[in-house]
Image (cartoon, rainbow over all chains, first blue to last red; front, top):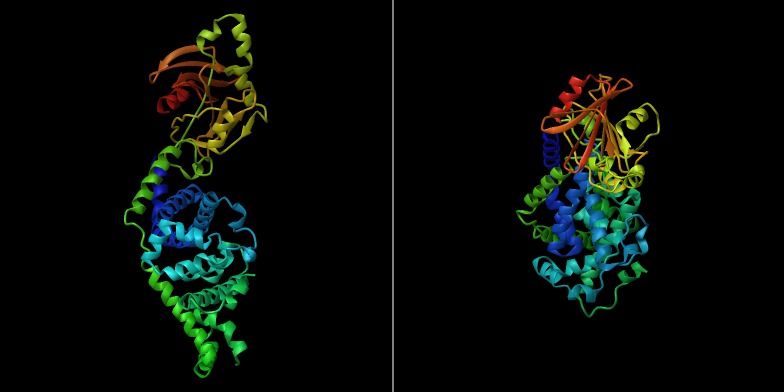
Length: 193
Length: 255
């Protein structure tokens, strides 16, 4: 029993500081507090179950983040029943965002979340293709390095750089567009074609 | 440096990944180029906007306590087999675990021929199991407890074996519902112990019955092996070892 207790203690000491990071990432991705809490729970459970595979001295946060993205994807698959659109495994340059405007606006939890932080920013992020959204969130929210993001998303570092470049400009353009509702359709949309 | 050189570098500057010399060149360009400066300011605005929103996404204060509780409950459930065998070698501590069995319910042994015939393919004897110990390929290895449960068709129950280390776990081939676990005393010892578990009524053993640590245990020996078989909580347990009977008795007392 001692062994299991000490193992759990060791796991918690190592991972607990990153609970907030996982929660924030999940909330920004899902815009639903309950879902974000579920993701944190499931992430830590999965991480604990595979703790024996974790190599000491490697990046705990990157390890947890990778697990959390899988949990988030599983949750999305379950919710929207479009499993092929959320896989991290594929080159998802062509992947469209999972959430449509109408879906977003009908979600009370999302509206609640939007009221708590920048609604325009949240809506803009939710419209990003997954391939651009994850690098952006991992960099801006989680302060992960290009190399860590590359490792988590299983893409080359150069791809991380190019996707960040595109994501930032797309978000910037769409935020500009959002603040100028009568402006002409931005070129930014073409970037998704 | 012209605009086409600078634009791709803005992100690197933004992420503080440019070397000092290059940063100076880009910043110098920004001073004199309105377009690039606008681009740069947009990036900075995006970052500050995200940073402001980021501060508003705080986790519920008790969430990690809930996580801890879940982990604790999970640990309790998995204390049995779940982390074997990877963890066991590390756990020079409380050792661990399990065992199994299902043997013949006594009344079946004495019932009519028809019933015995029906059970003939569902049971095995201590003597048969001992004979198989010296042959290879008699066990289908399976280290994952849940998978083992699934393949066996029942949930394994465990016993503690302090100071013993699990080497192998799996399904005893001759009877798919009998699990087998092989232990060694420690890394520097050749003392071995094979433990079987099966649903009650599966493992037959003929020998001398005696009460030990509250259990009705049948002891016997064959081919230099000592064995002990008992039934507990709906499971038959059979221990087989070359260690002397008093040592086997000690193991069962401590199990």
